[in-house]
Amino acid sequence: MNKARLPCFGLDIGGSLVKLVYFEPCNFQISCDGQDKVGLEALQDFIKSNVNYGETGTRDEGLAMENVVLGEREGHLHFIHFPTDVMENFLLLAKELNASILNNKVCATGGGAFKFEEEFREVLGVQLVKYDELECLIHGIHFINSSSINECYYWNNLHCLEKAEKVLYDFAVDPYPYLVVNIGSGVSILLVESAEKFSRISGTSLGGGTFLGLCCLLTGCATFEEALYMAAEGDSTKVDKLVRDIYGGDYTKFGLPADTVASSFGKMCCEQNRSLVSNKDLARAMLVTITNNIGSIARMCAVNHKIGRVVFVGNFLRGNTIAMKLLAYAMDYWSKGTMKALFLKHEGYFGASGALLELMTRMKEDEDSETND
Image 1 (cartoon, rainbow, N blue to C red):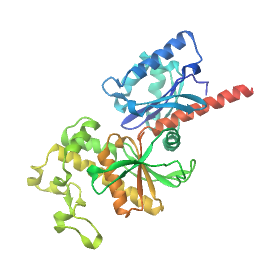
Image 2 (image 1 turned 180 degrees about the vertical axis):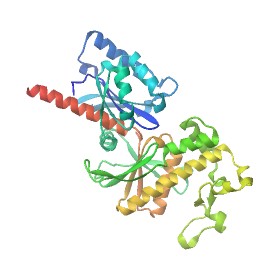
Image 3 (image 1 turned 45 degrees about the vertical axis):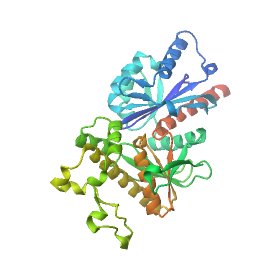
Image 4 (image 1 turned 135 degrees about the horizontal axis):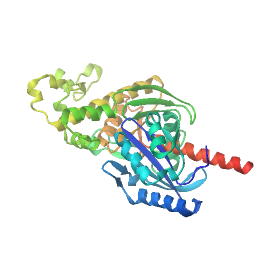
């Protein structure tokens, strides 16, 4: 790999969202001058001076990390995301900003690193150096967790979800083994036995993409944020058939409480029930359906592999406190307190962070090689 210039970034191009992690080095580490320096500073100013880019791009200002050491360089990390279906607009904007001045090679992961490889080459003159998305995910989790204060947490007081509160958790001390449940468009579940030993053990196609797609069909909403807003205002019990709707109360023989979902969307078989539900109720029911399915699969994997800690990550959880609390409650209740659901502040940015880490590692190796020569 040719020696890269600073600043640098890593990309995770997923099925629904593109995640970009941008490394802004300390000024004294930018070793260029003339037009190159002007271009780099202009690009840096554009990124830092905006929180929103166009109609759909967003910099998660609250997630920015300062004074991070990466590849023996010190700088700040910025986290940006935008929908994958506006990739063409992103490439045109990057071309306008002369973004390829950073480097003619960019480390990327996710399926889109393959899908959009030719577009990056044709529009920007940039080669995507591709890395496995699950390796980047795990490496990114370990790096961010070790570099970010208060990264990991769990939910307490789950007997009343409205009053549940975050509690910090020190995940850096003896974390292994644990499960990672990565919830993006679909879901992958990984068994992590050490920093370098991990494997994909399960997954499901019913993920964040399913939630948003069905909400768009059923309610007419247009964005993930709109779907979440509707779900927060809805009542899923008007849509789902519960244990009490069948038994009149608890199913005590098998420990099923009356408010347990017996059949997702089960009440919608009746025309009268359909006339009573709102779009908000449908959105809430869809969120509960997807979350319950993910939680059930995650718990079964944890039982099979005798794991007590399950880390939930992915952009489905971005701003999605309802899903997080539901996952936490389900894991705690059905395991009788033997399993803990953990969450990480940077949710969906670990793949892009892992790709950036690969880039900075390569840069360091190239520099060491030049020094030895």
